[in-house]
Image (cartoon, rainbow, N blue to C red; front, top):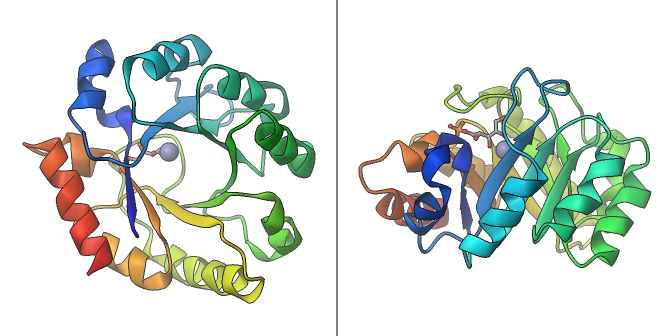
Length: 216
Ligand code: DX5
Ligand code: ZN
């Protein structure tokens, strides 16, 4: 089953509660946390996640594009996130961090920037509930999908299957009607879409259409 996670980075930040309701039927809400250090952009932090968690029944999928996730990720679980993704490039102790996120009751997820290979992290996969393969350089919505990431998605799916793991494989960046089928074919099963959902006339309909394409 394909899961569609609209990214509120492309929503109106002054109307977050309404924007969350505008994508009823979405599996998760993808919340991009940026600190202007790990990426050259700044978005939101723990207090906004706390408020958003109270304002919507849709579970929150927090994508931390920040330095020192070892210190911050557990606070996003406490703020109400049901899934927390940290970047392996920023984590000092990814295994300890994944275990801490799980122990606090959320799904633990690890992200790879486009230039970070999956192979060195094969042994970590059992510690995770989801792996995120970035299909753009993190930092901004609305960028063009990087086709050169498709082989990495394929290799990651093979590793997951080889180890008989249940973890989800998420793609994020440039996912749209024209790229989602290629991602699904390569083995992704969780799809983040910002501009393709919130840039659409009817965001809820865009979610349904993307899901149908991913499952075709
Ligand atoms: C980018 C963020 C993405 C972003 C995707 O660094 O991680 O979640 O919102 O936006 P689109 O779908 O427009 O590429
Ligand atoms: Zn993201």
